[in-house]
Image (cartoon, rainbow, N blue to C red; front, side, top):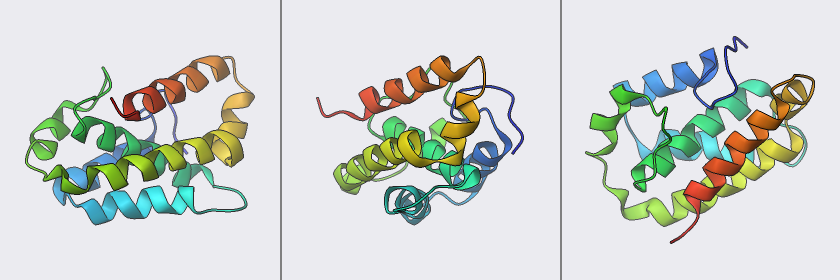
Length: 133
């Protein structure tokens, strides 16, 4: 996994996921990435975790709460999406983020760095943006 920062789009896997979503935006792509993490009962590998966090960031943006560093090239894509199923997506995104936070290779990798607290704060910020108003 290529990583250059603790934010949720700051790695090659998440950047590739964002590009795939930009090129073929679909709820199915988001659901697949989120479900892979949310429904895993054992251990989430780093790539699956990175994709789930990127998908959760996209969901937060669809709900009108993008991160400050949300990829600008995704904005025109998300404004065209019908957020009719956004409640289901929101709940699944929350579950996926919590799962990544608790039982993932990504969590273990970040725990070994000086940016561990910043990464945890990034996840908490995402969870806050995914909350209902």
